[in-house]
Length: 577
Image 1 (cartoon, rainbow, N blue to C red):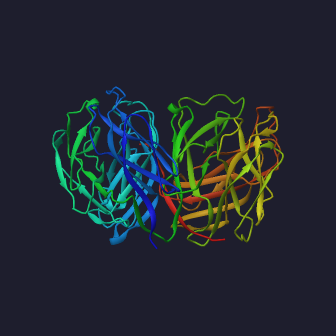
Image 2: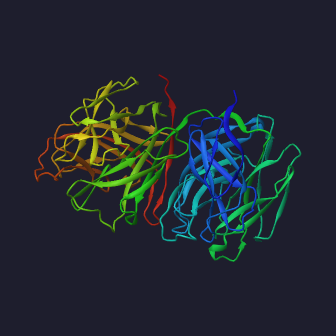
Image 3: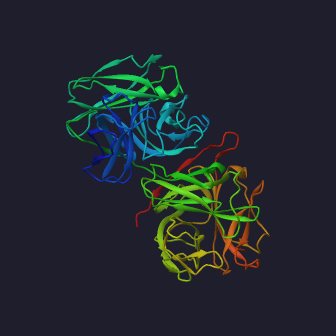
């Protein structure tokens, strides 16, 4: 049965932030907002300042050449639930969000987006989601060989802040090309491409709409990367059956004022209605994404992460959880208390180990996985959840219970998801069984034994060797690591170790002194060391600890030449309990 999945309308905006109340609540909204007038003289764009489940905050953002004040403009807005949908007449819509990088810093550092089920080159609308520090827009480049399969998203920020290594979340909405049909509420939708040759700002293209439209909401996005100079599609003259479109290069960009042939994606929605209805595409759900991140030295150990719009209620894991550099041990701290899937990841040193190396980049694998109970493609079971731990004495643990019937104790992986307490802290567990485990927080030596309540994400995975969406993988638990700095080699037989995604986790709580797991790495596998906290004393003797290990053989996620990030989606069937 068809269900509501999108809402749209028009509003009037100025430079002041204005809140648009939505009539329905969204779980994971993606927002597109486009001006349909050009009343003000200064160059501007529509900024999506904040996104909530039942509201969006919008405003007009002028470029540095403006005075910060802008005349009122009519703006069309569209909010789509992330996912893939089909409407009457076979119209297909896919929406999501992902992190993007600044185009000017390195054009090769693309952020890939994959589409599924389109038979031709889809119309693609895209926009930065959330407030940014500066005047930022997004750019789209379709796959040159198969545009129906997806493309790359970039940030267009290089005009004003060429040395700022910006990352920001970008939302995208892909729609079947050359579509025309009802929206389910008595109104109409039309989508199409507008390819063009070289044009200047004064070149105006007129469009005629079917008579079925009342005054429409018009959306437009540049949908190619032919000319890298800053450019935007400008919509004016909107009437019931027509509108005008221009291509404008930002006057502050220092360009020639003539665009070299970029295309435009266009969408018209009749404003007699305010919603889109359709059927969600079923089958195995996209529920996980593995990838690779780099924290550049220029960012002083802090990096913004943006959880993908295809994932609706996620837990984040990173490997290595700890890195060692000249005797300094660092953990990755995640702050998930920020809005709309934008999270800050910070490297935090053990007390007394010194500052970060300001000239070193730090790299790590990541996994984002939706909360729930899952069955993987080879039948393996997995459960993902969160629980509050701490808020008092560190000696008091919190029990979690598994909903799945594991035949043997699963491999369990943990990561603290919040930064409610500032002290160095990691998550540990003991007494894992087929039914559950007990979770603890552990601070550095010399702490007062108390810590604020933190949200701990956990993932329990059935052990063994298997295949997940065609990728070989290996899940183990109970592998023993002896004394610190002795090293434990984990042999990897599925392919080049450099291509593998890995997680590792201390799987018990034998030694009471704080201890960290360090991935030293080898050419043919992985080598893990225990590194005991030395901030309180120099003693390093430690009882043997066991680890849980998760390895997934993927195509190369890392490209050290251009520092690109590759990522892969994974699917599973939800297990209803």
